[in-house]
Image: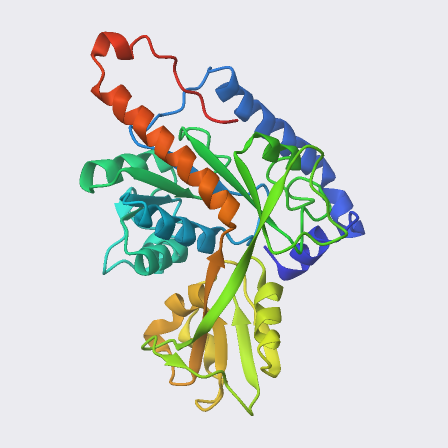
Length: 358
């Protein structure tokens, strides 16, 4: 996915170069609708876990803030006394799936985001393109009582009890076209079916949510800079310019955060989301030259990081109203599933089958 394509996607109108992709968008829309309808009509069944399953996802391609949102939810669930685990697709990984993320896991085996989630959350993380397999592996090998799916809003085979849709407040839904002519995986109206819609930052004036959708605002907060090599806290680079790199879904958001801290940027380099950094990418960068990056990128350059390479640690602040509602819902689902598991077989057979929250 080129940076130019993303720029075109997030213009208000369909850019001329994308006109030629509209037939493919129509085909994508049709296939996605058929696939979803198979689950709605129960012609294909979704697997229901014995513990609450929470899906955190979006209807657009690219970064909206899902990963920091997942981390914030994990912390909240732990404060409630619950034992969460995370499932992820493991995008970019080529390892044997399903797999648990461990101390020896590398981005080329299981993807960059699962490693970051495991290191920062401290909870079990399982990866597999088929998220059902990852969820079953977690339940079989780890002591967990709630599962969070990082992304997977469109992965209907995994039954879910709670859905949270994330929207980038600054970019919205772009040109409102489906892939590949636009950034939408599904229609923005899909968000009417989720339990909560959270916007990453305030929704820009030029964007709007479909009628009938209410959203709550969350905000990404900066915690401080860390050295890539040892993660120790440092002061903001002062009095010198820096090279800023980003291999994430929304690099401009990160560049803006760096500028907001008063750091002078001499050069920015944009790489594809999930880019596999190599030492050769930095051969022409001076050893004394500060290089700033995101935490996700830091994971992939740690093996060859130099002393003046830093990453920005951030955390998502979730709205209090949402947290109160979320707590009641997840505790209620957990109690219901526990009671169902303890009920006699004859009683359980009379309970209605749960369908995914489509």
